[in-house]
Image 1 (cartoon, rainbow, N blue to C red):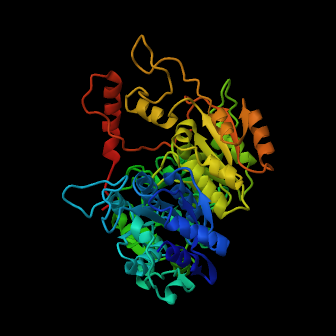
Image 2 (image 1 turned 90 degrees about the vertical axis):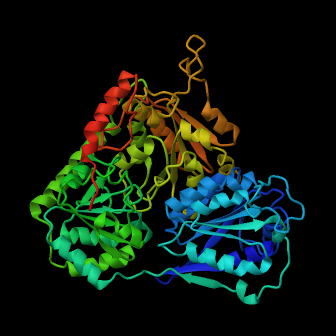
Image 3 (image 1 turned 135 degrees about the horizontal axis):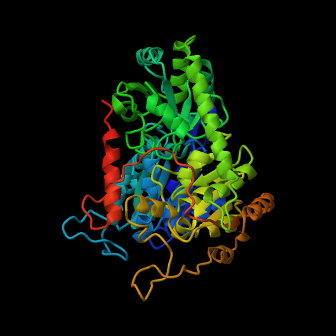
Length: 618
């Protein structure tokens, strides 16, 4: 069975707009008793007999290899991905977080975890989770709620249906995510006479589902009545390759375009219609336009709480929504006039129907002026010159200045995603890669490796805080092993800066967010800072390390890192107490209703004052 799976995966392709590519471009794997004689043997045999048919990549952590596959898939606009194989038990369940991340972000990844014996001949086997009354349950059932496709192949003849079902989900833009096929370790090694047709080259056509003309007409009618329309571009714009159509529509109509985290880069930051980031991590410019918008056109967005500022961003009582989305459930959110279909196809149809209509000149000028004013604020944040330690915004500015237009910045968790969303000047649709659907600490380095594997011609800058670095830095060894050139900017602020600020805002006084010794005098973690040297850690893994003591040092380090061969890590310390310019927005984080702490009571009062702005868009 293992040999059949490898042979099948090597023959799968996708096609969109006449362009064909491999669907599964390689396989990450960590081997144990569950898969070493199954998929392990099969990958070895393929490597010896047919080099390049399904390349094998060694990983250090099972969760991390799923992150790498997700980063790869996102960079390839979901048309190609990687497979991941693990042993039974902890190796398999380590992938559950990665599966959730892929499914939340609608990214196709193929997971092949080993499972317990189908024959039950030797159970309980090593690492088997026994359920006393449900004998068919294994630890791999944890994958069910976080996978878009789940199957367990208990007999060899079930394999074709499982593989074809997984491929369907991986290539369906409206229904993609983690596809999990659990493979009992005994069945992996069994032989079977599958038909030759299973292994023939197979092309999965990724269709551009056209919108209903009546839905386009309804959407156009809503827009024609608008005085202050606003487009919110989500990840679907980029995945469908709709950036040029969106730009043409914005230029023809004058509608300003705000962007979610996944949609950032849909327009170049300095385009006249670019309003900037929206929502809780957005810019005051975009949020001011959102507050007064009478029609909001959401394109390829699932309207997360950050994008809507917990449903406070769009404040007009009469605001109406038009949603364009390949997924019907997302298109119908907020009682919208919904258009279900591919973003590129739908925008093309909408542009034709709206031909000749424009937003008012004064409104267009206002949107451009607000965006330009924010860009001046960004410049001040980038060049503030704080001492002795720089602000995180200054570090972002130095990296942004060093990056060429097609270079990619990668991030996922902590305070940096919010700062990047507001501040990063994106000039290319694939130049901004922040995982903010699951916002998973530890994604950054593994995801950056996947990005670089998918786009070897681009420089990749991985921005990671010390908290997230400590979660999962081990894939640096994979980067060294494969000579994958990523530049990691490790921002050291001796704790969890994002949650520290959030903790303070809800009255919890940054409790549990700083890396300090336990103080014998107080019994609390409020002693001296820990002497952790993460740069030395990276150096011990084989990475070329540069220590930057200032923004000038960082600029020089970035310059020297660009031509380097292999991964580079630049370590820079920042002051976590210097915040980036505020989004002038809100995020719903409930505060304790009853407390003996005055700081909490004050935060609760502020929370109660803000909450009435929250609304349901009905």
